[in-house]
Image (tube, rainbow, N blue to C red):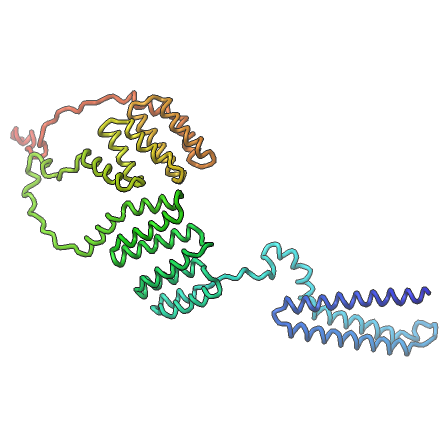
Length: 418
């Protein structure tokens, strides 16, 4: 009975050994760059081991029954030598695979091992074709990549750029971007970038502010009450000026320059030659009109607030304009902090007390405690009293009256005959 269990145990161990060797062989074939070479090594190893086994069995059959050690010394030496030679040959054959198998778990933690990278499109060949002035071939290559990776923004943007800028087909570029923008999973940032680029092309190639405005309004309609919509509204507010500048650059006519004043250096004063700037009242009126048409134009509103504070001395009106932008929830923290700091500047210089300016700066810390602007506000709060003190200690100095045209008069020494 014990012999039966011994046979079962040996059979099980042999099966496990064969299975392990088979798994190693399969693993080596799967990971190898040259499976035929691994298969050749496996066949050679099997033949080598089988030959050594038959050799040993033959030598064991020729052993003498004598108890004298020297009687079987020759056979024992040959058997030991064959086993050693077989082991050396196998080690030479399989050392690269075994070392890689044992060390790869450690190296895989650093280089990712043999895990294949995530598939992604490649546009380098298409970009090279475009640089060589082969836009049609570039478009073909990009479409092949987009067939494998639909709605990849890099490919869509590159395709539209070639269509608009190289092939001069803005309609095709617009269709490419429209298809991407209508995708329900398109990221908002990429949609806004595509529509903004489309608006730029309408202005650049056709000076068409109307079509550019439609593209920007699509951002406002698609993502209302967001920062993307605010940026689009800012762009819409300045489209007319951009269109005018582009048209003027294309239709620029020769300008007749009037003859300049002769002997300017001999004049007692050249103040009358300086062109008159627009009055603050006119500038303020222009900003008010701009804000009536485009209430979200933060640039015009900020400049209007500065005029209210500096020219009209109306800190309350400047505060109203700035707070309207500060209270808008979709502006980025950096811009809101800028307006709060500007309001604090106007309060310090406009006669507000310390507590008012301090409360303004504390809003930055309260609204954005985890941003860098909060740390800057804390630093300014620590020195805020010094700002008020510096204004109080700055005396009003009256400039003296000096002799005019000193540079045009002769030396006093020459006048005395020296």
